[in-house]
Length: 266
Ligand code: KIV
Image (cartoon, rainbow, N blue to C red; front, side, top):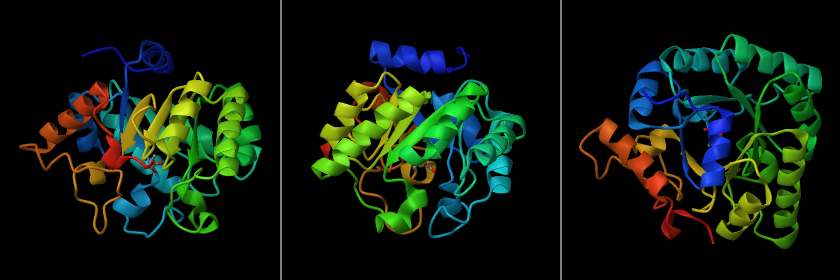
């Protein structure tokens, strides 16, 4: 087995131009398969509220849900870095963010926590990092704000929105964030942000120039009910079985062939 992935590994990948392969995971069995396929990061995403629990958004997901699924993943995980989402309204203030992130680390086996947003989370990011809790930021389409954003739509298409995202990325890095998920932003903007920050960017619907890619596991396997997001791809289409599909995804990300223009936003 190769060495465990740490923040230092991710930093080295960015510096050396090696793409980072990340997939969401919510249970022990898929965690084993994902690690065997060579995934670098397992994201215990609050997308579990939609693909596992059947809600129409991530808002109903609780801390208890995240601790439960994170612990399931941690029991099976060996090599990949585990990032765990802080659910909606679990980091509305600094004290609450510290307490809940601590629970995800202690009881959920998280290596890093992920928070959505820019300006509003800066103070919490500073506090978490100063207490030894690594933070992954999340900008662009932030699903916990779906009602404020008016739906699941591409962000940063106009000049003002693009400048705000670039500025937020820089400020989050200054506050201590060590990685950044960019969701549903135009290719050129994601490229600009990835070049402007030294933390690795992990894109989803953000084009090929991010330092890594993430997909929701159930989208990658084509088993999400309803409409598949335009930026995702069913890797099971051209694979003999699930392990083959997971390997094909990792290979495509590492080779820089996924996402292509058809799975990105201009
Ligand atoms: O919850 C999740 O799965 C996520 C990814 C979509 C990035 O945050």
